Image (cartoon, rainbow, N blue to C red):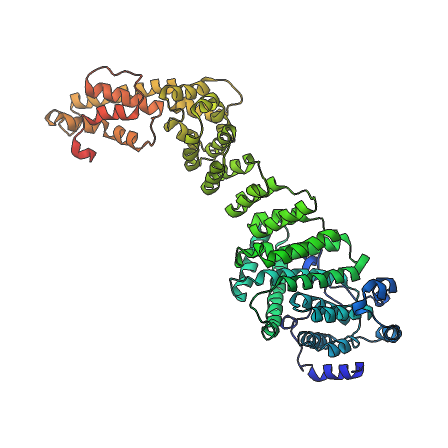
Length: 610
């Protein structure tokens, strides 16, 4: 079939209306000259303008039969004819609609194994069209099933390159993204629509954490979602053709090896035209779908053939010069893509690469990715629990805190976590941590814990009050003594707000103030009773009711104060009240809340206590 015949066929099949690029399987264009995008979106949407000077690939790059390989070598006669056609190609250019239709025709020819038609279509394209055809042909390698298909696709790729295709960067970025989608979709749990929705939601979450321009973030989100829809549609298209040829329901190891071998051939063909930056961006493109929507698929995909394929793909990109393994590793940890984290750990070990497993543990714990945390500790040997434990305690992440404690934390790590929880008034976490810290450690560090918590608190000392009320030293006298010591100290390390709070409520001076207030209350009450200033005739009331009128408010205030201990100020008032109603001197050293309240309750009507 000649070029004129192919062009006539293209024009016959071209629709009258403008084609929507999102509806096809070919590359997406906004104009004949290619879409210009910012660097942040280059991973998926790079379109290189037509470069007439580079329309012909140099002989040492692609068309040397010895370098390309015997399975797809081009004869000298073809090279002569091709050179003549390359000269003419610089003088003409396909319109956008013809270019899209030609891509669709090539896609159908490749899928139906009409290799003669596919090779004929290549002869009709200008440079930009050939770059489109290179992408389409390269994408097809991830659906190979036999050696014959591999050989035919390899010949086709080499022929496209020899005819002038030169945008290897765009081809590798696009195909690595698609390859990852193909590998994980072999173990799909969600339908295609849900998968695209999950991808979009995860991307929005990712962009919300970026402080860049909101308009650019929205554009990036829309473009990535559009590209994901294209990838899913491409997989569905090829899957329909494979259903009639596949005798089994799963991909075999041989098929994966064929696909990876074809990709390696492409890398050899591209040679020095792919830079380290290209491999780095391709690595990011391959990890991107695995990071953002790995939860859409079976969690066991990383232990089967899909894992073998992903490892092979990422391994070749690392060998080519990708240097962002650690960056992708941290991203996968942040999104909880445990399967990808496990694969990247193996790749890093195999290639002696440095990755920060401890920082990855921080990311995983921050976003409650328990499964990823287990992988990082068990398989990545992460050992630094202090940072993520303290942050989890400060934020009140009980699930994460429990996980770290159950995995084993040192006494100092637990004390620092308790300090963080106390400073942030995360009383639930503080209550959980207290029993796990030995008493002798708490006693030795009690003053430092309270001082540090007070210094780091953001206007609220509820956490400090919680420790004191719950007798965190398991010794009332010691707990009160620690609070009084800080209240009376002139240590600049203790925040003024903390010292003032303890002096007002938890110091010995506060206890004396409570006794004084209790005494004044009793004197005022007796004056009212004796002088008859109240319309109630106290002398006619039973003693329990008189006691109720005088001290029910104090009783309720003490009952509402949670914990084992009362503040010194409140305890002073209660001690004075017990002394007055019981008619005997009460030991001021009685510190147990229950004991003092028990004496007062004995003088109150029982029906009011129910």
